[in-house]
Image (cartoon, rainbow over the protein chains, first blue to last red):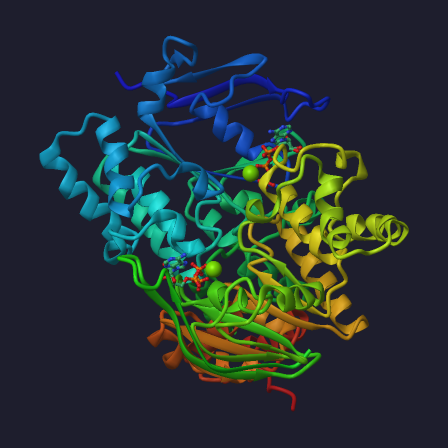
Length: 280
Length: 290
Ligand SMILES: Nc1ncnc2c1ncn2[C@@H]1O[C@H](COP(=O)(O)OP(=O)(O)OP(=O)(O)O)[C@@H](O)[C@H]1O
Ligand SMILES: Nc1ncnc2c1ncn2[C@@H]1O[C@H](COP(=O)(O)OP(=O)(O)OP(=O)(O)O)[C@@H](O)[C@H]1O
Ligand SMILES: [Mg+2]
Ligand SMILES: [Mg+2]
C-alpha cells in the first residue's frame, strides 16, 4: 500500500554549527506522494535548510524526518539520496562532469542506470531544458541560465521520486521559467513524482497544489496558492508579495468591481471581468 | 560615464575546441547618467557584454570607449585598474565575488584595495549595510555561511561601498525575496539619481526594465537585436517573440483586455491604481476619460 506521506517532518529543529540562532524551530509538515508543494519565505527563513534536510545533507538536532515512512539516518541515507533529486541554488556546486553530456551521464551511472537507457535519458532531459546543442560544452563555462538548465536536466534524467528545485530557475526569463515548470508538469503526467519548488517567483507558485510559507524558521501558513495569496497584507508584512493578477484584482475590488473568485491567472480575471460587464 | 561600443566582438577560448563567439559586431552608445537595461534570452551574451565594462574581458575585435579610457584587445592591465576604481560590478552569482573569511572583510575589500582611507570606509559601512538590509551582527560571520539571498546582499554591499561612477548589475535581484527585490531596486534608482550615476542593469524582469530604465538594449545570439525607449520596445510583441522574449506582464494583460473588450488602453507607465481605474470604468460600461 502506498504510504500516506511521501516525506514527513515532525517537530524538526536545526541549528548550524557556530551559529547561535536556530535556522528551523520545531517545523512539522508533510508532502504527499505525487504532490507538488511550493515553499516560499523571506531570505533566511529556512527554505534551503529544509531542502538539505530532505535529502540528508544536514541532519536535525531535534525531531524526525521520514521518507516513505523510513526515518532518515545513517543506514537509510544512501537509499534516500537515490529517491530524492535536488537542484541547488547555485548550480556550480553540483557539476561533476567536464562536459555537459558527461555531467548528465555521471548521475545516471551513479544510479546504476543501464547503458542502453542512458543515451535515451540524456537526450530526453537535455532536450526538455533546451540544451541539446551544448552537449560538448564545459558546464563551468556556460552562461548563468544555461548552468541552471543543465543542473535541472541532470536531475530529471535520473527520474527521482522526489524532485527538489531550490530557486532552480532564478536566472531564467519568465518564458524559460514557464517552460521548465511545464516540463515538470509533463513529467508528473507520465509517472509518479513528488515535487518541491522553493521560489521567490510568485507566478511559479501557481503551479503548485499546495504552498508552505516559512517565516523566521517557522511554518507560518500552509494552503493552496489561492488561500495563500488571499492573505495579501499579511504576506507583505513578512517580506512577501502577491502576483500581478491578485494585486490588480485588489485594486479593482476597492473601486467596487467585486471579484468573488480570487482570480489567479490573466484568463481567470478577464473571464470574471467580462461576465460582470456583460451582465450589467 | 559615456560608453561607446564600436564593432565589438568577443571570442571565448580562441583556438581551442571550446572556442565560442559570444559577441559579434556589437555597437551602441550610452550617455553619461542614463539607466540602461540589457535584456535577452539565456546565453545571448549579456554577461559577456557587461564584463567588458570593467575590463574583466577584453574585446577580441573592436573598440570600447569609456569616459577617457579606451579598451582594445591589447590594453595593458595597469590602465585597466584605473577603470575598475570607477566601475562597480555586481556579478550574476554572488558566490563568484565573495572570498574573504568574514563578511566585514569582504565588504571592505574593494575600497581598501583602491586605497580609500579606513575612516572613510568605516563611515560608509553602516550606510551600505542599511541599504541592503543586512544586520551588523552578521559582520564577523563567513560570507559562505549565509542563505542565498543574504549572500546576494553582501555582494551588493561590497560594490556600493566603492561608490562607483558606473554601476553594473547582472541580475541583481535573483535570490532576493519580494520585499528585498523592490527595496533594493528602489535603492539603486535613488542612488542613480542622487549621485548622478550611470547604471547598466542586466535583467530578466521586463517589469524592472520598464520601471527603472530609460533605454533598453535587446541582445540575441551575441548580436544587438533592438534598442530604444523601454515602452516603445516592449510594445513590439512580434519582434520580441522572434528572439524568445515575452512582453511585460502588464502589457500582456492590457493586450488581452483590448481583445476581450474591444477597447484599447494605452500603456505609458501608469501605476496599478491608475490602470485599475480605467479598467473599472470600461467594465462598468462608462466612457474612458480623456
Ligand atoms: N552554513 C551556514 N552556517 C551558518 N548559518 C547558516 C548557514 N547557512 C544558512 N545559515 C543561516 O540559516 C538561516 C536559514 O538559511 P536558509 O539558507 O535555509 O534560508 P533560505 O530561506 O533558503 O533563504 P534564501 O531565500 O536567502 O535562500 C539564515 O539565517 C542563514 O543565515
Ligand atoms: N568561458 C567561456 N567559454 C566558452 N563559452 C562561454 C564562456 N562563457 C560563456 N560562454 C558562452 O557564451 C554565450 C554567452 O554567455 P553569457 O554568459 O554572456 O550569456 P547571458 O546572456 O549572460 O546568459 P544568461 O541569461 O543565461 O546569464 C553562451 O552561449 C555561453 O555558453
Ligand atoms: Mg535558500
Ligand atoms: Mg548572464
